Length: 295
Image (cartoon, rainbow, N blue to C red; front, side, top):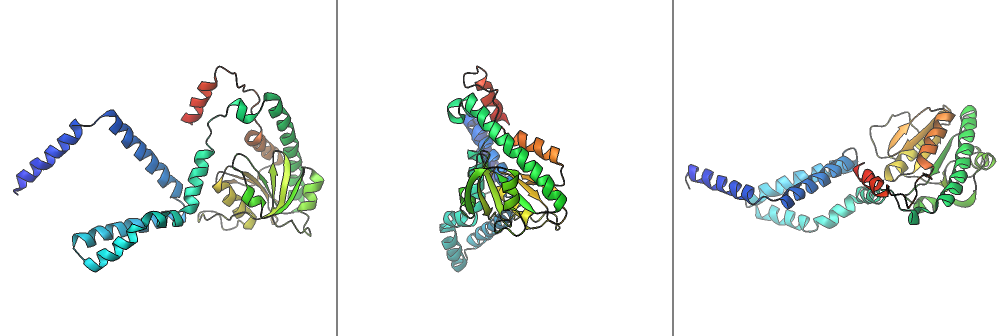
């Protein structure tokens, strides 16, 4: 086929595509681009990114081998890519789980019949506020005495698997109880304490360590565990360093170090207290929902 004829055929194919292009096609492209963007953003700083590059190189190699009609190699690659979906699920299990948890824990506001009445939320806020105050005061004392501690505040993402690794307690938060848990000779002082709705649910819990390679080398196991849990959900984790006495807070895979008691209290109040000003009969609820979607 002459070169000019190939050019004309290619141009005719492009013209056909553009002439048949409709609004659903545009929306389809936008959706695929959105998914790919967030997928790359999700795995960019994890080991999964290296695996993804490895799969890309294998895909290029498979195309070349097929084009060159290398039968033995083509058979091996064909067998490999036949079970590709199962292989991806196994290798990317943590990232897939994180993505689903992120979707399920989106910031779309909840209606009143999911969050409880205004009075119930007010009572719950009082319990949480007392727990926050006790935790902040205790962390300040721990910092002065250089006693290590790691305290997890559960939010929308339930931490049942983490709780099951520790010792069940289910008690009201108090300075005395937290002090006993993290006393250096206590059997539970090395693990994490989990707080749910203003109550200590478990202590001595084991948290997953972060896989990030970009964090500071001077961070110990407590800080790495705090980051690891915050990467997998929406929990807020408070850490007191045993070496420096500094107070840190981890949220959404980010660690803010060496904060004061007042700053810690402010951040915990902002993250954990429910908004009691919202009402399920509020005429502006639709506006709030779409505002959440935009965020």
